[in-house]
Image 1 (cartoon, rainbow, N blue to C red):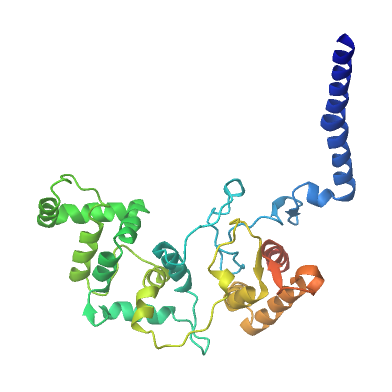
Image 2: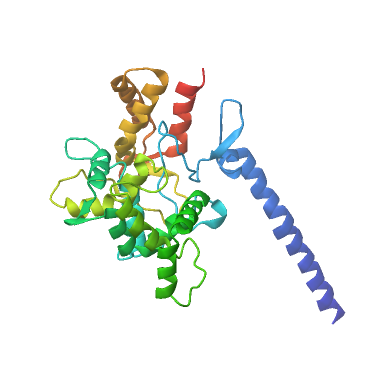
Length: 316
């Protein structure tokens, strides 16, 4: 009995030393000597040798002079990797894609649609009926409430409106007896309906051009269904399964090229066409395809390309 027990103890000690000591140490040595870049997180460094991100994980870029990655359901948080899991029939997906398309989609001649969306909105007529803003809020109550709750300035604006329109608030309470102390979000639809009537063709608070283009692109498209628009690369508006895909297709990058080149041209006071040619060469030099180009379409790593743009045009 004691003999079996001692053998078991020795076997346990051997396995602990081998599995918990020798094996991890061997992997660490191999990783650090042969694959040090991958073993340390595939980190990319700037010109000051400081880490700016991982080559394997997407991160957001908001400046016009840089390429943007795919949308992320995880907000580019590596600890919360997730897909959107929204079906094609889900209105939240349609709305998110429409918001992305508004400022970037183009006519067949290459002209962006955005300015025409603003002009259409100012005319204040949708499907032959007046008050676009009121119709939007009525059709999409959840989106109206999100607009109010998403920003303290928006909530403050609605609260101020409520104080200056007590009769309307009292009528709301009368129509909703279970809600005797409505908050700003509760009044969202009513607020937009009355604001639209009092301020046709305008938007509450100081909305940017892209706000109007994003929010009302879907309605504009319904009013202009016969107009032919350029196709947009699918990965420009759809999330990846992880929400952290660091790559976009070369087609996606080329679709963004005009914006990126024009932004650099303004910043550096250079010719836009020249900037476009230079940046396109950077894209093509950094494009790659699976199995060394034998399969699949070409794609680029967004962080790698943006780092090269930064080094070429920002670092003097």
